[in-house]
Image (cartoon, rainbow, N blue to C red; front, side, top):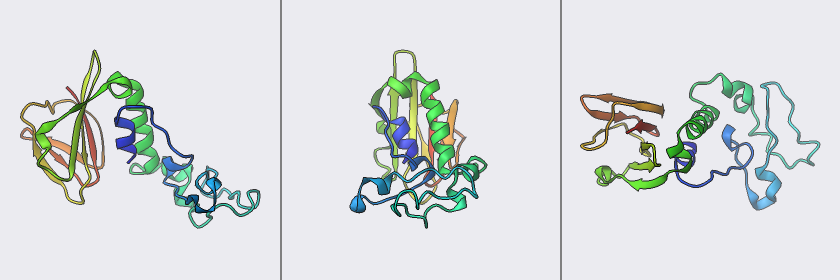
Length: 170
């Protein structure tokens, strides 16, 4: 979801903690989806200060900034990497969204272009639970600028793992 949010057009907005995988329910009020960030693995939670309006079962050491900063497959890493790409490539930050019709017959694949005056980036997301191999006939796959999960090009085909995304400078 973070890769999609940060590669689509418009300004990305998120609730505090989304970048760490926090969750919440608005049924108890908005404060339940604005849980304070757990910065360190051993850091205390803020439940007492907030009158118990925090789901402490969620705030484990593995969901802390410290733990996720050292985990190469963490939600935080996806937000950081795709956020940096959005800052670096104007096509991701301000470009128009363009259709990539080459994958329209693949139900688990979403692919589109982000185009600016000076750049064109192909964005590919695999929303499926299985890896897939895709043959692009017009898109160039020789300049992979970022991926999460698994993505590799072999014999002109993109092999993209489940729940993975890949960005190619065109």
